[in-house]
Length: 537
Image 1 (cartoon, rainbow, N blue to C red):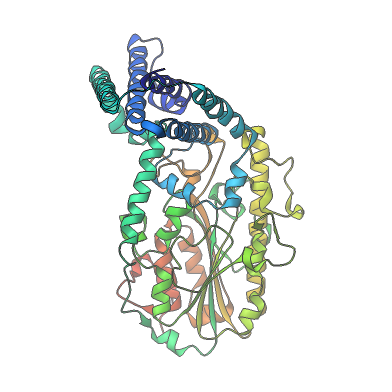
Image 2: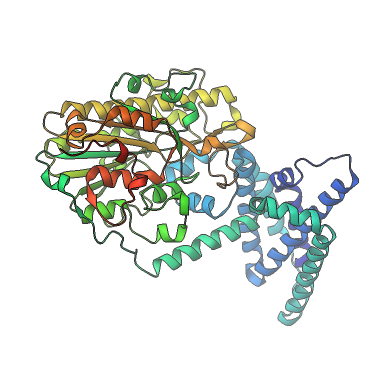
């Protein structure tokens, strides 16, 4: 069989089976009773067929023909499953997040649905492919024929797009993100983009920031140890946060702490961890977002360290995303606290393991960052012990499509109950040391989550089109009596400020101000506490 015939057959298979999300997005709102809708759909189908053939024609050659085609069949099947199952767009940001996924996360994403799709769209076609006898040609003849086929595909693609240029141009101009639904081109482009960015970043050292950082007078005058704990939550959304008015009380323990301050309107920098974590620890976050600059520069923790603040990152997730590079860090799974770890995962109470001993030995000013596993999906039921399974029936499966939306929400809310407990226990441990250590807690989630609304699940949609539930996150602050007094904080003023909008952009400058680190990077207008500090006597 001629190789170009095989490539055309695979291109047709992909056009028929891999692009339901693309056609749904591209044809949304169009009148199916109108002939031009059918014409536009036919043009898009033909264009996808031609594009897939061009890609295959450029990549599949010689002795690597079958292995490369088999690999692309697996990639296309996997990409299609996750786009259809969770409503995700496979842009560079999402692919970076996927490539940084650890073994535990990856295992939870494997399901019978994924296996079935892989069988139908990859394993069976590969078996047929391996049984084919391909027609052999001389090198020159093979090159010439392939060139003619690829040029022909390009002509078909260009001709098809010209025939529907006006509606297609309008679609691409208003909804640029849908190009990341074209499979497997989306994966190939996004992986290439991520690799190119990483190679560019690896070629030069991380740029230092805050070289002028030094302790301020308040920090120098402290006579007692001061410990600031920043808790980076995972996948908690404001819509289900009890303190922010959710119909269920998912934060009962925090609600009993009278000195706690809850921020109701907080916007994340990104919709996935790979974007949000580096962004929230950068001096300029979403308001002037520059991914290359953020990833290529030091973070808030480096500035604090430069000023003499002791810093430590404790992780119960997939790493600090470069935020703690070159600084002290600990991994909960490696420490393996008794009774809290199993199957390559640990419950978030493991982040508090050894905290009492650390507080007893605290000196000077310290910033401790706790990176939670939190509500990481899809296996929400694995994020909490049985004692927190309050809302029933809860989804007890890794494949969310096997559960009702109510069951998914129940499992998610149970995981929030556990986060509430972990935070309350943290505050309790700090409060128990209040006679000797001044302390504060700042908790904020990295991004939100979709739980089936508009048939969307998990997170990671391009920021411009992501629903609010993926971008609105909970944030709370707590201060010990000693720190409230030494920092001259007006808590009633802070409660009024908490009723106003806030963002991840505030984290960098609020922590600098609270630690009293002086640097030109500090922007007082982005310090949430600045307007609530009483004048010095």
